[in-house]
Amino acid sequence: MRRVNIVAACCGAMAAVSPAAGSAEPAKVLPNLEWLDFRSPKQCEWSDEANRVFFTGVRFDERKDYIPVPATTNIPGISNLVTSRMIVTAESPNIITYYVDFDGRWNGLTVLGLMGIHDKDSLAGDRTGIRFAEPVGTVARKLAQAGFLVNANGGDDPQETIHFEDEALYGVSTFLGSRNGETVFLCYEIH
Image (cartoon, rainbow, N blue to C red):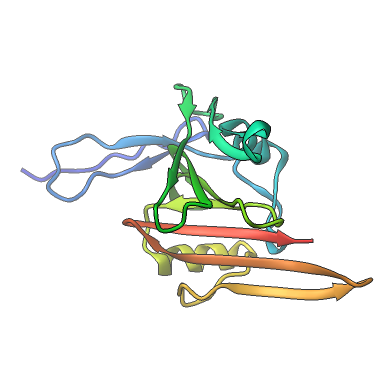
């Protein structure tokens, strides 16, 4: 018997992901994450709604050196509330990585959630970004087509554009690489 994957193309707000070949699971329909957007991809400037998800998905405890702590938020298009998770390693106790986990489709890619890296020793803001299911090369091509500053080969080398203006440093730093079986895109606007 020949198996056929059917992709639903209705409603404009949904996208489909087919199961792996030979899988008995039905296709999982993932929400289209239209809210996950940037005002300026080249400057890593998140849209208002993406900022809302980031900053309601994690709280910063002012009593504890302004460190990130888990929070629960709603994600547009996702029916369940999501609670962020934090990871601190013994090797880097001043660096807190936080995750807001959910699945969806954005820019033709499968999103596994958002993440941020907070360095308690740094005065700079957090590096924030998106986690993807596709391989680094695929994500690199899609992000470059969308106007993001990324290594076209998808390597781990950070990409930066920095300039001085009125004795201040401005620019963007991005990272795209594979971490724990996911492709991670992080960006940071320097100002």
